[in-house]
Length: 327
Image 1 (cartoon, one colour):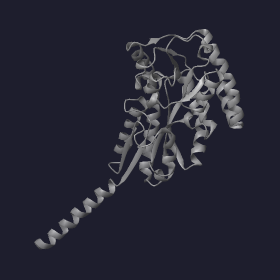
Image 2: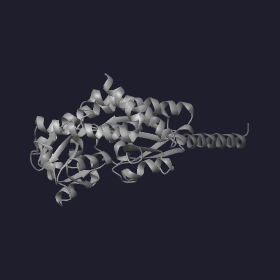
Image 3: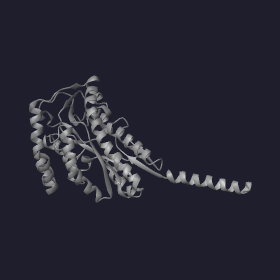
Image 4: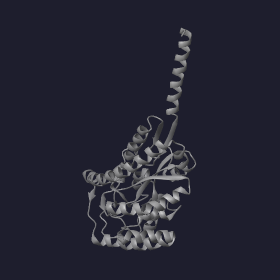
C-alpha cells in the first residue's frame, strides 16, 4: 500500500469518526421551567437531565432554562406544543382555566400529607395523560410541592380575619378561594411576590414554605401558618413528536429516568418541607400552628369548592374523587 493510499484511507477514517461523533451529539433540546435553580423541582430536573444525557451516550443534549428566563409559566405548555422547546414543567393548577381536571390537587384540605398526595396523583395520572396526549404531549412525571401554608403580617386564627384583604392568587382555584372568604383576589407570579407585598398589592397568600424560601418571604411577611392546605404538583412533560423521533433505547432511557425523578421528587419535597419551615423560623418569621377554627374554616370552604369542581369537570371529576375517598 502506497503512502498516498494510506493517507487517503486515514483521512477517510478520521472523517467517518468525525461524522459519527457529530451524529451522536446532534439532537439538542431545550427545556423551560418557571422556578429558580435552588428550588427542589429544578434540582430534581437537573438530575433528570444529567441521567438522560448520560444514558444517551452523548447523543442527546438538553439545555435547561430556569426561573422563567425563556418562557413564563403561562407560556410553557404552549411552547412545548409548538416546538419552541421540547420539554417543559408546569404547575398543573396554573392551567386549570384550560381544563379543570388540572385543579384536583388544589382543592383545600383534600390532600394534607405526602401519602395522600401520591394516592391522588396516581389516580389522576390517566386523566392527565389522556388530556396531554390529545395535545401532542407525553407526561413524564409529577411531583408535589410541600404542603401549603398561610403567609400574613399577623397570626390568623380564622378566615374571617382575611375578609377584605388583598389576597395573592396564582391559579383559578386560589382565585375562587379568595372570593369565597371575601378577600380581593390578586394574581401575582412567584418571582414578583416580594415587590407585591412590599408595595401593598397583596397582604396575604397561601403557598408552600419552599416558595417562601425561594422568594425570601421573611422580607415581606411576618407569620407562616402550616395548614396542609393543598399539595399542588408540578408536571414534567415532553413533545410526543420529539420523543418518538428518538431511537427506542433513548426513549426507554427517558422513561426510566422519569420514573426515578418522580420517586426522588417526593423525597426532595418531604425534606424541603422540614427544611424550609425551619429556615423561615431561623430567618425571624413566626411559624404558628393553626387553630382548630382555622382548619374547620378551610375544610368548610374546601367542601364548597369540591362540589363546584365536580360540576365543572363532570363524570371524570366525580369518579376521581370517589376513587380517592374510597379508601
